[in-house]
Length: 474
Ligand code: SAH
Image (tube, rainbow, N blue to C red; front, side):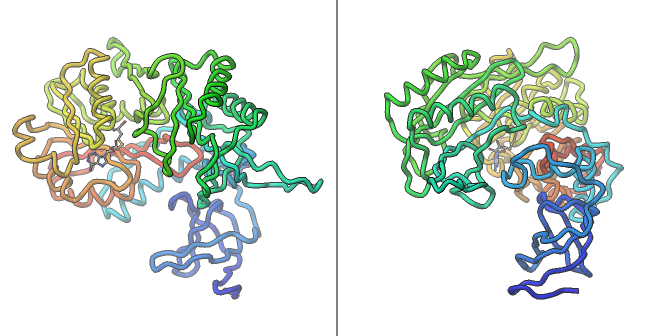
C-alpha cells in the first residue's frame, strides 16, 4: 500500500474519516492515525507523510481520487493561503456537526467521562463578518501569487495576514469576510495612501520601515476604533496618514496611533495616542431578563473583549442558565478577563467575585461595574493558583456557584483540587479547548456529575469550538 518517496511514504487511496484535530482532517491506515490539512470527511486521497511523531503522523494530500460529497466551494479568494478560515471547504452545517463531535469525542475519549446527551451546538448568528476585532500586518515581503511577466520587479508591499508557519510572509488581503464594514475599506484605503505616498512597510527581518500594523475594532453600537502602529516617530508622515484616515472615515469614533520601536508586536506597554474621538469604544449587551437594563462595556485599545459579540451574548446566557441563580448566591468568576461575565450576571446574584491575572483587565472590570452602576462585584488581580486560598475563601465567602473560563491550556491541577475542596454546589465550566476541559473534569468525577453540556460556535469556518459544562455536586 505504501510507496516510498524521499524518506516518508505515500499512502494511496485513503479515506478521510473525520475532521477536528486542531483543524486538520483525520485519516486512518490500519492503526495509524494521520492528520492532514484541508481534507474533508469522505474524500478519497493519496497522502504524502510529512512528519512522524511518536503520538501522531502528519501528511499532505497529493492527489484526490474522489471528492467528498460534503464539500462546498470556499467563498474567499484567499482560502488555502491565509490561515484564517481553514474550514471553508465544509458547509457551515457540517462544520457544526464536526465541532459537536469534537466536544463529545474529547469528553468520552480523553476524559473517559460518563456524559449526558449533548445539547445541540448553538450556531453563530452570523457565519460571516462576525469578528469585532482584526489586526492586519504591513510587510515588504508579500507572498507572491503571480510573478510579473513583464520582467519588472514585483511590488512587494502588503497589508494583511501572516501565512501560517512563516513569520515574515504576509498575504495581501483584498476582501476579508471576518469583520463588518468598513473594515475592508479602511484597510484598503490606508494601503493605497501608503503606496501612493511612498511610506515604507515594515521589514521584520531587518526591523526597519515605518508602517507595522492596523488594528480595527467594531461594535454593535456603531462605535469604531482604528489604531495604526508605526515603527518610528516620523511626525510628518504619521500626521499626514492619520489626517487622511480621519477625513476619509468620519465614522471612526476612536482614532489612535502608537509608535512601536521594539522587536515584539505588543502595544499594551506603549504610549497609545488618541488622534481623534474617544479613548474607548462602547459595546452593548441585551440583558438576560427583558425588564433589566442593557449592559454597556467600555473597551480601550488594549482591553480584551470576546471577538464575536453576538455569540458572546449567547454564551453568557448559557452560563447564566446553567448557574440557575435565585439572587442569593455568592458566585466566583474565575479567569474573569475584563469581568464581562461577572458584570453580566451581577443582577442575578448576591455577590460576584472575579479573579484574573492581568491587572489592566481587572481595572477594566472595575470600571465597567461603575459604568453600569453595579455594586455587588469585586475583582482581584493575581494568579488563581495563589489567590484561591483558604484565607481568600474566608474573606470573600464560600461560593455557591463557580463559573470558570480558563485559557486553552485549561486549569492548573491545583486549581481543580482547590475547587473540589471549596465544593460549590454547581460549577459552570466554559472552555475554548474541549481536550483540556475533558482532562480537568476527569479529575473532578469523585465529587461532581456532568449535568449539562452545551457547545457554542463562536468562530465559523475554523475548527475552534467553545463548550459549557454544568457540573453538579454529588
Ligand atoms: N471570561 C472572560 C475571558 C477569559 S479568557 C470573558 O468572557 O471575557 C481567560 C483569561 O484567563 C484571560 O484573561 C487570562 O489573562 C486569564 N488567565 C490565564 N491564566 C490565569 C491564571 N493562572 N490566573 C488568573 N488568570 C489567568
